Amino acid sequence: MINLDNINKVLMCDECNSEFEIKYPEDNSKQNYLKCTSCDIQYKIVDGVIIFEKKSNKIKNNYQSKIYSYWWSDSHKNIVYDNEASKKILKSTINLETKDFQNKIVLDAGCGNGRFSDFIVNGSPKLYVLADLSEGIFQAYKKIINKNFDIVAAKGDLNDIPFKPEVFDIVYSWGGNTSHKKPKKNI
Image 1 (cartoon, rainbow, N blue to C red):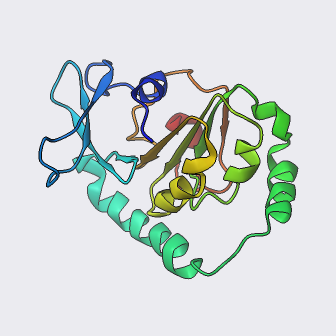
Image 2: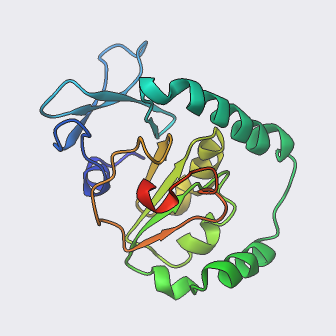
Image 3: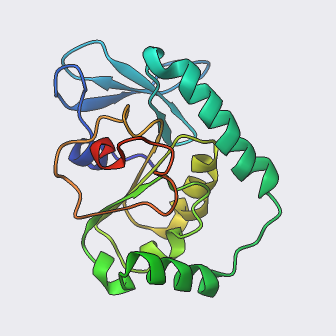
């Protein structure tokens, strides 16, 4: 379930730095969207995921999105990950324990299909933010939406998602940030 307070904890309008509101159309024929409270900037919300697309990057992002979407939706659709093996892989590469996520605002930058989400969620983060360019974000969101904790899911290039500065306690990326020339600049 989308929670506006959680959205405004981590996101801001990239045009005027204002907060957002959620607009629900009166007729069910239109898409819900996130709208800046001060200017006309708005973003679609699809199945609980906020879609961030910049027209200037659309061609490049569409190409990357198609590649990674194929990876998560078609190439990996029948793969069942062993949670214990995934936990060992993540722990050995980011050197954090489950307890390290407790009461933290966490960004999974390039979450893909949410392979490591269960491990993070078991740590009881204050807020868990999923971000990915691919369609895998929808799988990641669906995988953990019913786990009864606070979540924000954003689809887009990390350069296009208007995160508030210095809001995250933990930012991690397991392979999701390798396609950027300056990965530290993205967040």
